[in-house]
Image (tube, rainbow, N blue to C red; front, side):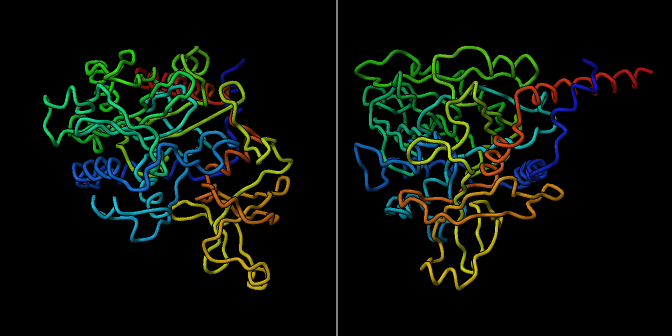
Length: 421
């Protein structure tokens, strides 16, 4: 196959401005300096003390039917945004979920191929399971789901994570790991490190965090088999440079866990709470059980469905910040159906009814179905809607990702040859 043929598959019409937002995110983190140590301490002790604990975790919205989901609410109430430790720990119900959900760094769905994928990104196979924070402090360890509810409370070999290793650490020492709990083997797979032995990693690059994670976690003994003083085992993921060989290995090589797609990390990204285009998730039928969303019966509906939030002016918005507007309901319909601001509404997208111009959504043809399930806490993100739409009509396939890497390599070789000439 000729080189120009390799480049054809991924040269599709733009359906997002994801690359522009990636560039903005990198610029913002280079300019923005926050009190990362305070942020880590706040998260650690809120995780430990958040009220409304339960030995049985509360179900996350539509987790059972739609597979693991990465989304959070972007328009939490102002009073749930900037609490200190004591105030955040006193939150309950929706406010607690809003506050805690905003602490995880959650990937967008990959809807276009990032620039410099072959040089600036890592890739790994994502484990299927429950996304959570694991915090060790004061001689015990807790894990909490993204909605703040307790998953496990247990002793661990993490710094200050059990009474047996508490004396060797300062009382202020704590550890925060971003994990996925894999039910089948009762193992925490660590996908990122937020804090280690009281040292914040928020403003460290992905490259540094991953190096620190792989060296420190093994040293701690947390990767050892479970024992009476270390109830659950922790494992790191095999992370590859996202070149041609690395991407193929992440996609095809067997792993100890059930795969749920691939995760892509920008090497220069800091740990940023909330949705970020500097971490991406991608799936297809060969590496995930959940590619297309299913309904409450586990069936894939004939038409794609989307959940949007009703704003006070009748507009229908995603959870993004700023939100993407998919349409508007007239006041008569809102009054007749007794809808209220903030309601989450479910719509069906008519076949081929999303139109784009210059990477922006221009028009959406939606059919109202009804209110979303009460257990549902958040609207869909724009990237999720677009990924689901593309998966039904023109999916971004592994061949497209590999072709983009090959194309970038060819362009780099050509530039090098031109410089020599």
